[in-house]
Image (cartoon, rainbow, N blue to C red; front, side, top):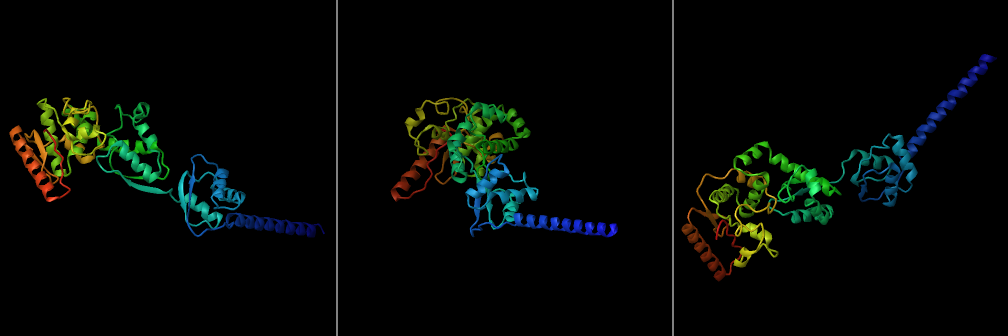
Length: 355
């Protein structure tokens, strides 16, 4: 009799255990596969940094991605993903159930934008690109670029980050912070301006700031890579002879309505960037130069040129004497007159080196 009773109890216990397991599996399946409204179009969601699972669920509810928050929270906990959802902007392509939403938040990468920063842009122009592409506050970006404490935190001893936001194609997450973007661009400068280039700069008697300042002038003058080392040579030769650089891009930097054809009165503007009035390099870079201009600044061509002037076709005529330079300028003026008479447009008016 006792054995029969024990057998019945064991059978009941086994049945209860099976029922509990079945109920658990059913509950897991119900919660994890809980259906959601399931709109046809993808949904973009931003998960702020430091968000709790409950806050993420509320965010999904506010954006009509989940209809009830508790099943979503339970599903993430049962799947072991309570702390696995990262911050960022995500594009959810399938929002028909908890499991599909959770897998996308955990396994997919946040939305990434490929952004190209061209050579020769000023900080304000770069800030404008990130404002347009990422919705970044351009004022905040520019404030950081001149914030002494922030600049020092990046390991630089310069008055501004003008010149140190290296042009490149970058991948940034949507809603990336200005600090992260600037830090990434400065790190790219560090990789480019490595120990070899720092040693080369020292050999030429230039600080890193001076080297980048010279590179920024070359960037402002050159259109074709083949001329960068020649333009560099002109400025190095003028520095050695203690001649004023008379670099037009430094004037374009200080006029408020540029870029435009420069006038004689522009050359009289009082500014530490005016290389027509002041000897030596300007007080800092005038744009953010690219790799080719930086390399050219540190590797000038072995020539004796002291002057150059635009040909009107994107290239320059390089000369050694002032008389040769005057002749080259006369040719440019004659070309300009011809273009005006023929009603043509698009001829370059940039004159560099010395007037």
